[in-house]
Length: 215
Image 1: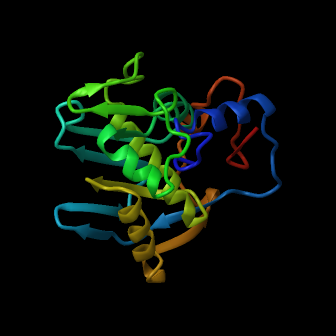
Image 2 (image 1 turned 60 degrees about the horizontal axis):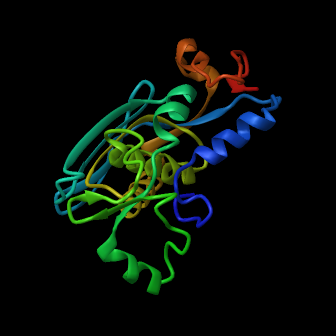
């Protein structure tokens, strides 16, 4: 999603579209990818890790040589409402100095001040500023959620990263699937799902506890 020219700003348009059309119950229990053994990949001081955890948790930290961004960290326990309200509006970001290079390479053709955070030296050029004080790390968390979804099932465990990005996220998934001992595919009924977390839905969505799916 982050690389799509029309939706470069964030995932919110997709979330809003789902709320508009609603959801339909499917006659099957949802399955999860349960982390059984920790997997970590590194690139110098940067790393990404998937670890056993009784829930769906993200712990991300970024550290940029920029006074505007600096060092930011966010610990996020996933619920539908928290994703919708706290993550889905976080926009991608980039520096003016990199824009020409990216466009010559065919990247970010639709990027503009309307849909991404643009930085020049120590200034944010967007007239409206940031949507969240720590929007930068929130967008990195949004990236991680999207990248990990390529595993095919929602992950039951904890994802941690420091100075991470798309490449490290992809490598940690590769590491996870390198051994069947690292994970187990389980049904919702096999997990101690917290009703409170699944009840925490954006307005307009309801939960079916038995199927552990949304409508």
